[in-house]
Length: 340
Image 1 (cartoon, rainbow, N blue to C red):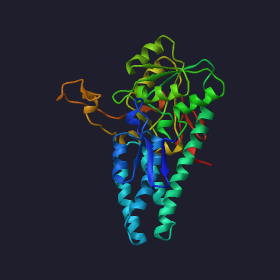
Image 2: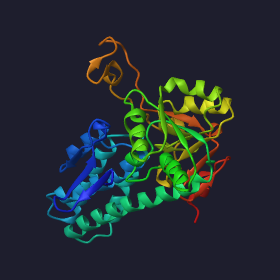
Image 3: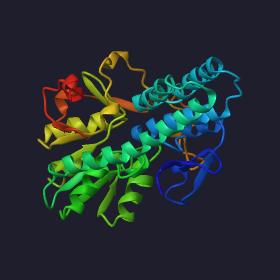
């Protein structure tokens, strides 16, 4: 099934609860805006492209739940919902993009029924587009991988981070589909272990060879010549940096030192043409994510914790950016990506 979808029978959002992986494959249902926001904050749904669609479906849900009696009142309800959804994960630009796309679409509706129909139709269209975009990213990116490559990836940029297929893992899937023998090194990605819990699980489901390592082992393997390429996803790409899961910057520095290509795979919806590093709010998460593991304390309960969800990788550390429109090399003139 898709990572996130709409249930027409119950008029609700259904998704895979990623916090349960790999121990349990569990489907949850969000019938209220509060339950969707909780799912986003707790990272039951995560990954930039999936969050974009979650934003779209969230707005469709908000329209369905509105008790407004006229168009203006419903649009005001949706604007309030938009602010609430956007606030759940401020760094990931796709979430706001998905919300705003629905707000823009419903402006053409003439009545309450039309707003609900347009919102849902546009959200479903976004979900279908996400799969198609990821397939194109995979198609373009697969040309960068050679038969026999060992690829390092960080966090999870696979189908669980998207509606399906994936961005960074989509590139690997497409290369394997082309008949190339690819090995993957997956970093565990502390503190929530998306690499060990989700990426390793995904790749094993597809019978793609994967080796799990601690985040701090990447440099060791690069120095030994084990790793040929690095591919990661992105949560926001601005004019000067790529924001991705914390630890990405470190891998980029190591890759540059060892002359290993460092690729970023992301759809155009991840690009923030007006943003720069100093203008982006990096999400700080609960310190208990580092103080505890599986509910058990692994640090003094009162220790001070700094727990940013993302870091910024400068463009000079990036070999190329892979999008649905193709592969782009430095210097990165981001505006050119949006020219038809």
